[in-house]
Image (cartoon, rainbow, N blue to C red; front, side, top):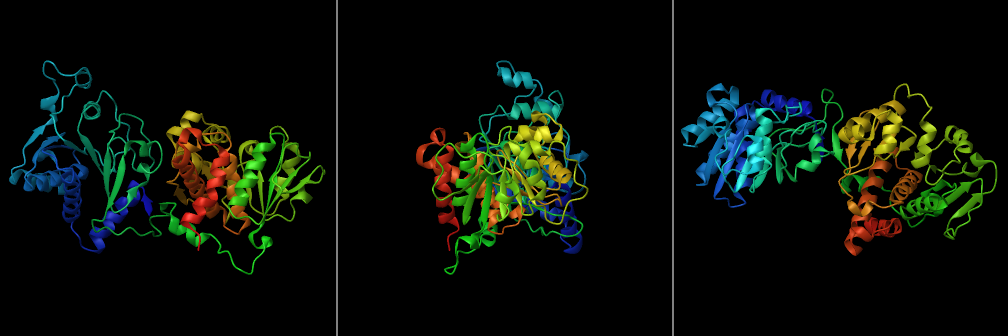
Length: 504
């Protein structure tokens, strides 16, 4: 399931119009009719459509005309007079007006009547009462923050105060369709109906927090990657993971599924959690390696290679290494190991501090060896940003860090982002508040290490690990409630997630 930027969508749109000879007004007709059908499914008595100046507004005009044909009481509120519109949007408005759709300029609503609510008065607008409001104000081409004191900003403020159901067309107005940035006022939609492919900015945070449920509708536009589009982002899906995971062959043994080395430091519980994540993810053997012998109970299935000074030798037979969970200040001995180890490495938590003095990679490798798994604060430190900057521009943060380090980056958080230095992006849809507890990040690092040991490439291992980890958290939360979930509960549900979705 592709996720496209505004620029990519424009390319697909133009390609459909030019190579398939499909007029733009036909695509607009399909889009607007789909919006009308979704709005009509709620059986509204009255619908208000807010239309902007561009093609997004044109979709709104078409939707209003189809709702009018269905006998729904509908009114269009416009930012621009229909005569000021251009191209297909102008034609869509003319058809709606000829069909008898009533319209009013939004300027007529700028002075709220006596007795209006304080919120409406503060916005400068009081929108008429309706069951459904359709947001067709700004489309995918808008990427500037909406200022609160602008006219459209005051309209959005009023729309966010209504009691009715809000349906956004393509993207909620105020969300950058390409990046998910929301620098100003944003429409909070209950649902978003989008065309041909979901827009990347509505899949990543913070943009995804305003979309509600997203419906993707086929309106006849081909969405296919090509040289001119560059790589297309995508959701991590069960289908993709099923293709990546190795089958469990009858004639196999522990070596078939790889050895994972896990660095163990002073906070030993974190390393054990990582090792359990690797084991539940299918790794054939987990080896804990460190300078000091463990002082807490270690699962009897683990191999302990601690108490010896040669750390590189302790992990030399491992196919993957997990470095960081619980290391604390015991970083220095692992610095040369990070450079010498020839297999893929998951660098998490304290291990990320080993990257602080490393120069940016000069050009991304064909397939990176490292998977970095920072949370927003760690990502901010590596980039020299603030945590607030990372959260406001999560997509840019993940892709910038991947490009600078030459590593696959999994930026943790709601709808975690997996970024490859060559520009590939995946977004993980699984996971919920059940994962908001200590140790779950350690489990994720170990799970990815276990997948790497089984032969998955770093990008696939990070994407599959994020999906399985998120699903395990959901299953744990369903069983005991999100507030009670611990990292060990997530570990217990990794096997259940794999069994439910991928066992063959």
